[in-house]
Image (cartoon, rainbow, N blue to C red; front, side):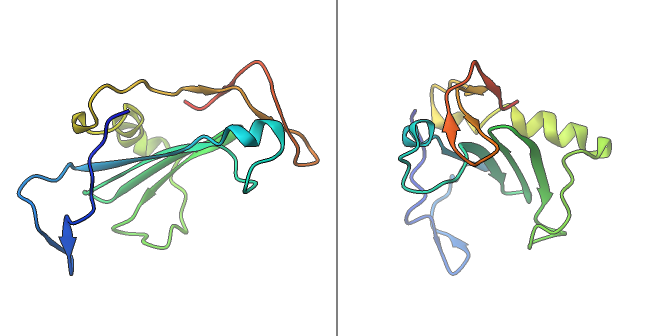
Length: 128
């Protein structure tokens, strides 16, 4: 996946470039997680943070998260299940800014966490 290099974009919260994408796409899909030898025990996840203050994240096998970082910078109020924010959810789940180039939306990750915390392969875990 292509991307935008944010290094050197900001100094003291001042933009150094004229054009900076309005969102940042983040993802962790650790293949070691599936086989139990991951460097950390985090679930696979993907998310997007926008310059208008929204953060959306999805973890394998867990309900999605939505935060308004302008009103809740410490992420204490999870807005995900609240239907009042459906329009933000639809916008954010669509994917990153077009500056990322070709983008294949990873809607499924073939992993599952057992009740004992062990990773194992499964048919599909929906991340949408």
